[in-house]
Image 1 (cartoon, one colour):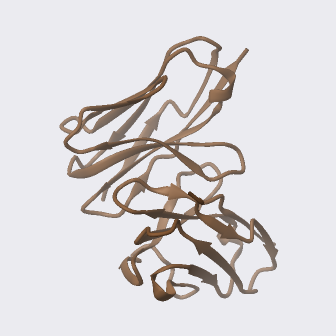
Image 2 (cartoon, rainbow over the protein chains, first blue to last red):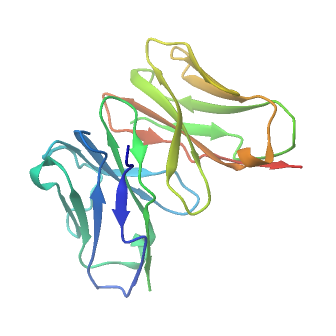
Image 3 (tube, rainbow over the protein chains, first blue to last red):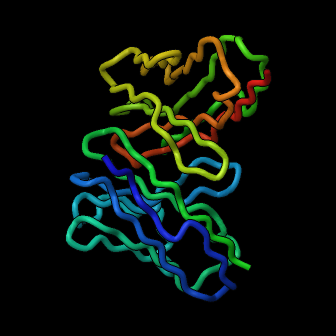
Amino acid sequence: EAGVAQSPRYKIIEKRQSVAFWCNPISGHATLYWYQQILGQGPKLLIQFQNNGVVDDSQLPKDRFSAERLKGVDSTLKIQPAKLEDSAVYLCASSLAEEQYFGPGTRLTVT
Amino acid sequence: KQEVTQIPAALSVPEGENLVLNCSFTDSAIYNLQWFRQDPGKGLTSLLLIQSSQREQTSGRLNASLDKSSGRSTLYIAASQPGDSATYLCAVEGSYIPTFGRGTSLIVHP
């Protein structure tokens, strides 16, 4: 069974630029999560999808972050414009029932 | 708001020791608790998931227990090995969003 795929693995951008991350969950997993993990901290949930509907986005900074999950499969997370404090690892996870499975993450550096 | 605390923040032990990692949470109304390991520069790997109706789960040298009423979970690692060196995170999920602790950084030296 293929795991959760994410791309790119690394991205370096300047502040005020835009960036997008892509996630392909495990086949058949209805729930998809995007997390932000700042160095030394645990992951913080940004948005949770159930199929292509949003379950929770209460911690998503909606003035600069957006996410979509078309057709209930792949998902993209976008930041526009980026700030220095957005430097973090962005993790995507999916689940069929309760257990979450994580992708390798995208390390974003904003200079 | 759910808060998750992991103690200790860091741990260094010699190979072969049995060790216990702790996770506490403030709101006992959880659906499940999941333990993960994270290797440097990588994503999270699921170790054990305990549903709210369960008391413990075991996988190989790992045993996780859950006491909902006291808001605590422990991860027991038997006969630790250098390959166990990683950061261990716990996460709880309930009527609120999934919430993670900051993790325990474990080093097992030969």
